Image (cartoon, rainbow, N blue to C red; front, top):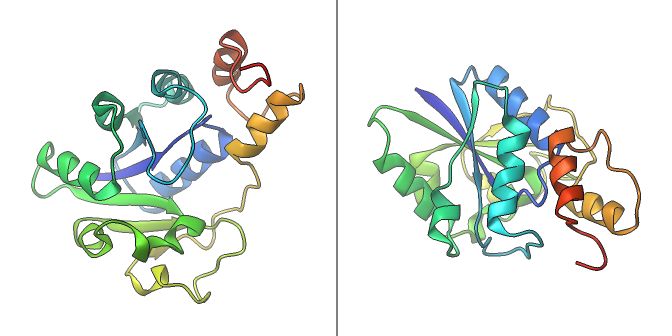
Length: 195
């Protein structure tokens, strides 16, 4: 089994996350993609509760039989580092299963500063998709780690930060998030200035 794991705060999940996941799935001939929403990301502020971010991920991937969601970090309700999650996931899968850890080039640029990056690289294929101005030849400690760089993947200038700002300003986020995610954001009044 070849599985891609896509971690993040998903605050909120948006169409670029889904497009990237589908590209990785197809380009690397993976069997499935598992989204892993973080309960308390180590280096990022979150604005929606873990349960609501989980609900948005589940709503976004509904209908795609090759996408699923792991609650391994949400269930713990604690700050979890990628290596700790990977080890737990490995323990719950077959020994010969292949892991593909998906991250943006902006995060990969700081990969050497992560907890146990060498161990992550031993346990997983690291899959890097374009993000921002980072390129494979950019000076970066992260680039020293063996990785699969999806340089043909489109750069999609969509971010959760911009989506939250649009909601706060009363602007439409239609087409930026799946409609089911937009419904949750509206129903729960997420990301509004009064939140």
